[in-house]
Image (cartoon, rainbow, N blue to C red):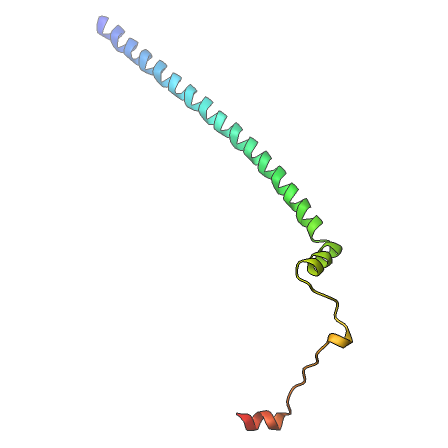
Length: 96
């Protein structure tokens, strides 16, 4: 009877240690999950901000202003337009 009590006590002790370990792991995993959810919310907010900023930058007026100021581009007019014509087929065949 004494041996049975010792075996049962050791089983109870092992069970308690296992329960404490599982509880600790559960709490740790829940904290990681909470941190991941917070990070997801922060990333979603950042993504929405970047989408709004991209839309603001892509307006036609903004693109035209940047093209004029930074790239020194101007509107195409007939005065600055160069037309390229294709050479006649006979001349291009002779050049080969």
